[in-house]
Image (cartoon, rainbow, N blue to C red; front, side, top):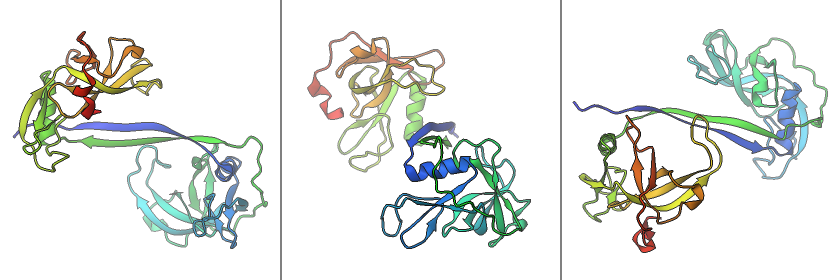
Length: 313
């Protein structure tokens, strides 16, 4: 049986966003142990608050304090918490309608087991010891058997309000290539580039996909391409990526390998970033033990004529 290739992959980036007046007040309130909602024109109080009424689409900014106590409206037990979740031990995801609110807030409930959770359970906020102005300032909810907590009628005006947040986004997954991609990866390990030709339009696609994206028919005829190619378009990267040991600025380009009808992407090196151009002729550079090119460098050939690659932009 042929080897089944697979590899763990991670897509991760920090998502930075600015906050409008409503979200700014909500997150600043959490930092100060105050939960704020927003009141609509018909008297509903929405928590978490939004800037536009989901029913009428009217702008709403009437902030109102609600209690840090509430009632579970529905829940689901999480037996195996994942990295970055609110609690490291099994817990319940719950929707909680805080006292004074008309909508429910999603968060974690610290409970000894699923038998201790039910719809209608009374809970209260457990505040984080260190608060920065984020939803994680609510560490979790915990069961509570007392009356609704008192509020002080906070208006949402704070000194030093939170104006922006950085939310890390991360996706962990295992990639398993199909037949066409497996052949492509095995060829790369031997310092070769192969694509597959469509039996209808006769275009050669690199990397191969096992099917022609234009004609929608299966491909199986393997065609070796390159190794040289032409830069069709490119961008200059000025922001250093986490865990990537490449100094900025550098160039990432679309490269049409000779004989291919689809451009692949790769880093351009061996030339100052401001001298990279469309039509530049390049070749792959391999590092010892690598299964794919580390980067592409100029070949020294004259630039390709625009008409030879204009359909591959």
